[in-house]
Amino acid sequence: MVKYWLMKSELDVYPYSQLVADGETHWDGVRNYQARNMMRDEMKIGDLILFYHSNCKPPHVAGIAKVCREGYGDFTSWDSSSKYFDEKSTPDNPRWFMVDIEPVSELENMVALDAVRQEEQLEDMLLIRRGQRLSIQPVQEHEFQHICAMGGIDFSQLK
Image (cartoon, rainbow, N blue to C red):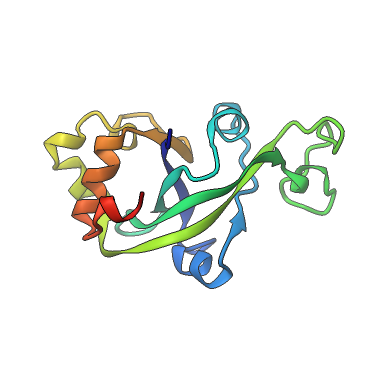
């Protein structure tokens, strides 16, 4: 069964357009245990992702991606030259994990955070809960479908 996620990336660090250009990428550098556990234990090949640009004006969902490789050790954590280095993480005993993702579809219309807040059907979405700052969040199927519709994407074409 497909699960749905929202993954945040700063527009000036790794935008959706770069994912399209690259064809796929590894989602490295996550250093929150709850988000790590989701990538390690719950994200499966084929799961769909709302690719969200944060720390920009306006913050927004820019596209749809999907998981193309399930959780594996985040190799940046054992690279001493990486900003994500963690001396307690090793290839034999990784502390941090990542998944690989690939683009599915750019939204015809970006879906701004303010627009999400105005939708009654999205009032329970984690993205708009006060204090919710995780860079990876589960999304309910109906929320995912609604965001797709707001962005001009036919959800039925994604399955």
